[in-house]
Image 1: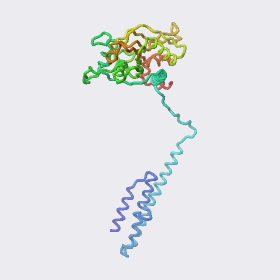
Image 2: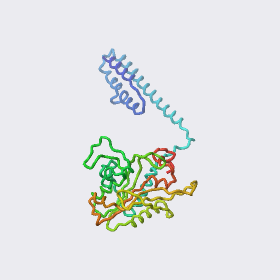
Image 3: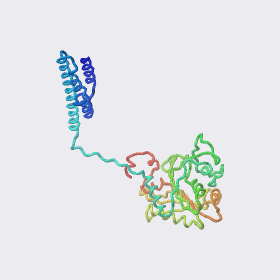
Image 4: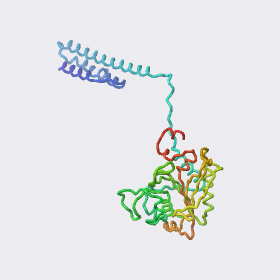
Length: 338
């Protein structure tokens, strides 16, 4: 019986693997430990063996102990060689590894700067949903169904989305639907900025993309005028582009504002025939009375202005970028410049 115990323990020791210093210590305690080691326990059983079998039993236990000690020593030496070999592979003359640190995307940088300036001008920030109802995106903003003005903002309808009481679901074409939501949720007077992504089914080119970012401004109070709108835009442009910025207001048409205007910024381009060119950055105007009525605001008492500015084009002007598509290509060589 005693020999069977020795044979079983020998097989167990031979099957053990030691691949770390922690495993080596666990092996030593389990088999060679002074108090509860399996081999140590075998030595304690010698007194229970018949006298004529004790010499052979003791010899076999000593051989088992020697085998376990040899296995442990070989494993420790192998671990030591691996550690020394790994250290030898380190070339201390090589330059240190560069700490690659990311930066905010240039669009995010411009958006944050715009919102910072607007907060100084008294605007609070509000965010609306990107998936909107047809009513909020069009009808409430004075785009009646089948009106030709909807063609200017051909959009993406959400497939299989259940139609709500206020029409089918669409990806918003502008941040203007937030005007309706804000005036329904908050009491006037109010002054808010609404940043966010918008989507349009447009041909992709150097100056247009199927998605882009806008910042919507809405200021509603008694006695708000077009003069207040122009002063706000001049203050924003000077803070963003510098004191010598050149703005141009052009009459335009938007169903949700009347009168309406588009605003261009002059961008210097040395290789251009005229030394530069005008680039449209936003549309604006006085809030149409029908929009006030849709949101439950009295147009006889309150007036207001609304602005929808394009973050991509403002970023292009800030950094001299000539192709809007580069913002969405995720080319690290481009992004590392910011």
